[in-house]
Image (tube, rainbow, N blue to C red; front, side):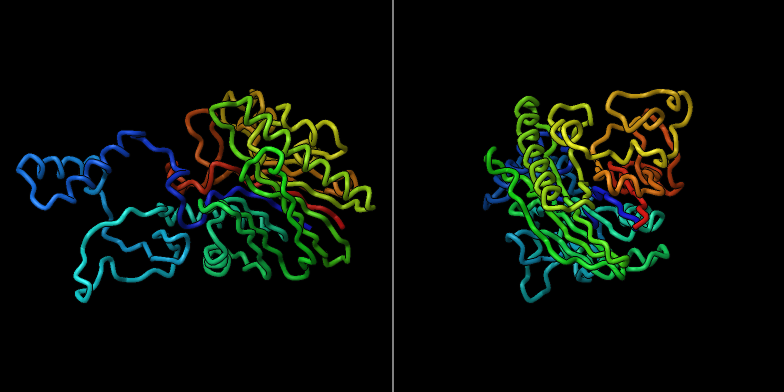
Length: 372
């Protein structure tokens, strides 16, 4: 049984709030000023010149002629769609409308989407966990239409957990033929901190060998400007996760995996309730764990919080195994061939990944193979 986890950072479109804003507050001010000018019935010569300046600053001059947006019934926003979009790029003559509207998401480059599929196809796991999916429809488009292009069969079963926020950071799972999802449970690990973060998801999965595994999928928030507060909140969440793990063990369940994005290095005190105070074992500590080493002098360098010496990217994504499963692991590794190495360190990547915008994700794919 091969299992993998990947924070894929969306498949076809990404919420604007998640993308780094190069102009900060200036961009917001420019948009407000343009809106005010456009609403005026008559405009002076200076105001028309200012509209042209603002259009350039906001980026209207760089607009693409390709249609890539459809209106979906989701929170009342105009959302980008991956594949099945209309061929029209403006309203028809019947409506006689040719204005502009602020959209909530930004399209992901098609080559970046292909690199996401290429990484998954190279590992070809039986059970695939994904974080940061925009919606189930996009997941199925990706599963049925993109993965097969890389000689990777579509997954037989898929399931997406919708969260209560609207920024397209859903969690999903995909299973191969022979694996069945017997039960799904969610745990609120945010109640004590009054936070609207993701819940902990428990998947109960039957395998072709008639074994049952319990897979806990977690997605913890990124650190905020107040690091002490965010670390304290994360620790409360991790304590709740550890309690669920302990409960499963007391019920006699041995085949347990905890995986997902924790957004903190392993030495961080906020992760200690899982890393240090349970018998869970990190996949990166297994003797079979393989990954291409950094190029050049970074090959012998061990960065604080990195996966290991020569793999100098900070660990944010985890796969923790109960002792019963850790001892049955036959192979494991990390695939970062579709990650863009920003300055140092450097590592081997796909030749088609020529810049950051074409990278599959800022996260690697972590995988393990277990003999059940």
